[in-house]
Length: 493
Ligand code: NAD
Image 1 (cartoon, rainbow, N blue to C red):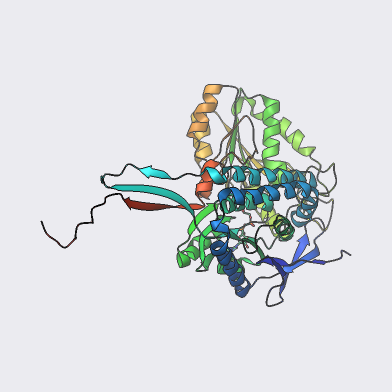
Image 2: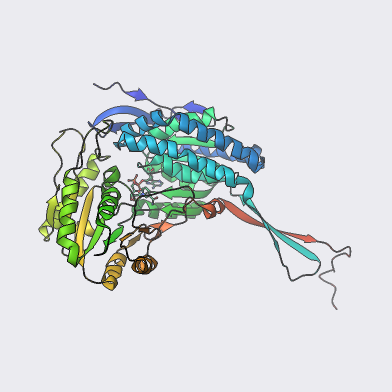
C-alpha cells in the first residue's frame, strides 16, 4: 500500500491548504493507486493568490530593472538543473511519462529561464517619426500585470516555463493553476521558486479543478492576461471567461499533426522520426504526428518496417531504465482511445499492431504502440486527437494530393515531411497549414524556436524572441518640445 503524501499550495510566499480544507486525490498511472493529495482551491483561494500577485506587481516586481529580474531567473535555472532528477521522479509519478524523458526535460527547461533572462534587458521601445513638428512621440513596452497561466497535465514544467519565464522577465506577476490530473510536479517546482529568492507573491502556484478554480482565476477582475494550454473545448470556456475581465488571451491547443513520407525519403531516418513523433511520451504530446501518409510505391515496404519497429517498443514501468513507453495518464484516456479504435475498425480500419489495452498490468493504464491502416482520413482515429500511441496510416500518389490531405483537418499545430528532394520539401513545408513543420526530423523543441499553432490549434506563440512581447503592452508617450503655450482650443482663427 502506497503511503499517501499531502502537498500544499504556494500563495504569497506561503505554503497553504485550501480555505475549505478540501483536497484532490491524485492517482499513479502505473497502478491506479492514490499516491498524493493536493488542496482543492476555492474561489477564495484564487482571490488570495491573485491579490498577492497584484500587490507584488505594484510593490516590487514591475519596478525592478530587467537585469535584476533576470538574475532571479538565472538562479531558478540553476535550481532546475540541480533538482532535475527529483522533479523528473515526481513528474513520472504524476503523469506516467518515462523517467528518462521527464528528467532530461526538467534539466533542459533551465535553458528557457536562461534564454528569457538574456532577453529581459533587450526589449526596446521606439521613437515614432511623428507628423507634428513640436512633438516627440515614443513607445515603450510595459508589463501587463497579473498573468493567469493554465497548465494541462502533460509536460507541465515545459508548458509553465514558456509562460512564466517571459512573463517574469517583462515584469508581470503570475498565478499558475496546475492540472488536477497531475498536480504535484508544479508544487515541487514552487519549492525552487522559493529557493531562488523571487519576492513573495510574484509567483503563486495553486491546485484545483477546472471549475470553480480555473474559472475563478480566468474571470478574476485583477487578471489581465491569460496564457492557456489545453484542449479546444476548455479553450472555448477560457475565451468566454476572458469576456468577464477583458484580458488578453493566448491559446496553445491540440493537434492531429500530419506526416508525409515520399518515395525518395531516407527510410531509416523517417522510421525513427515517425516513431519518436507518435510513440514518444506514449503519444501524449500535442505535436504527436498521428496521421501518416505514405507514397504508394513504398507504401507496403515502409509500413511493414514501421510495424516491425513499433512491435518492438518496450511498454513498462515508467521508472525502469529499459522502458520505452509508459502508461497513459488516465483511465478515461485509455477508454477514449479504445472507443475510437473500435469505431475505426467497424468502418474498415485494419489494425496492424497493438489496438488492445496491454495485459502487462491489470491496474495501470497501459496501451501498446498501435498502427491502423485507414482507407481515408475521415475515420475516427485518423480525424480526432486521441492523445495516445495510435498512428493512422494512409496512402497517397502525388505531391498535390499529399498537401491536400495534410491540410484537410481542423487542427494546424505541427506537421512533418520526409523527402531527400530539397525542392519538394520546400514546396510541401510552404503549403502545409500548420504552425510548425519538421523536415526530415520530428519532436524537437528549443527556447529559441517559436512554438504554437494555427486554425483550431490556437493562437499566440510561446518561446522565441517574439513571444516575450506577448507579455507586454505598448505605451505611447507624447512630449511637447515647444516653448510656446498650446493654442487655446476655443479661440477661433
Ligand atoms: P484540458 O483542456 O482538459 O485542461 C487544461 C487545464 O484547463 C487544466 O488545468 C484544467 O483544470 C483547466 N480547466 C478546465 N476547465 C476550465 C475552465 N472552465 N476554466 C479554466 N480552466 C479550466 O487539457 P488536458 O487534458 O489537461 O491536456 C490535454 C490537451 O492539452 C490536449 O488537447 C493537448 O493537445 C493539449 N496540449 C497542447 C499543447 C500545446 O502547446 N499546443 C501542449 C500540451 C497539451
